[in-house]
Image (cartoon, rainbow, N blue to C red):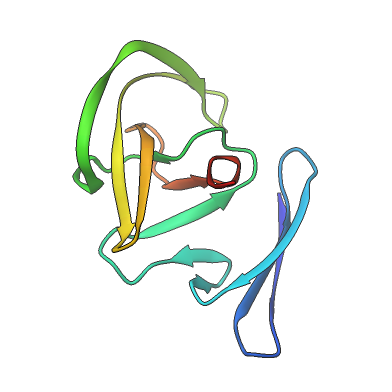
Length: 119
């Protein structure tokens, strides 16, 4: 994945990148800082990912509720490792943004926001 950062005329960070599927995207937001989506709440940094099919986190403490999946399934991590996912839940990014069905992936040490799940 390649990316570049620029500032818009209003001074906001603008992120342009090409995802794993070769899709090019460009957008700006007051929440972007150095190419990562940063929220002022305590949920930490989330990476915007065009290639992720689901939102994921490795931090169980971020969940407002957690549930066991009726059928656990296997996902492929970027390093080629395959891991079984058995838990998911809701994560509040800020007061008015709640992510639903976020996968708990303890073996993957990044928080991912799936662009396709947001659209």
